[in-house]
Image (cartoon, rainbow, N blue to C red; front, side):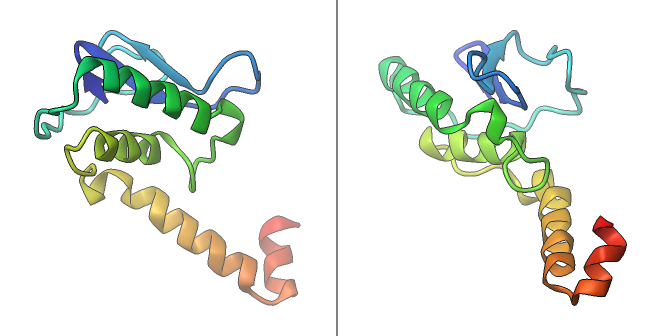
Length: 120
């Protein structure tokens, strides 16, 4: 999420001393492939409140909680955008993660022989 000239993102970090939330120059994160800009409304939240929101997000999104299907960079971006008052990100952005989470849930609720085929 780009706000005030910085891009904020969320990713996995096994270290408690390195948060999952990071920032940098827009569109050049080394672990992401930039696809396109999605323009949302401008936020009316003042800079001091944006800093407070980011502080909250850093606490609420530790890197060790990252989950590719259930708590990923798209979930973070959606949450951040909603807190900024600009609405959520488009549904197509995290459609694959939602689909994967649904498949995982079906497998976990399947009878044991089926689960064992997937999980060993």
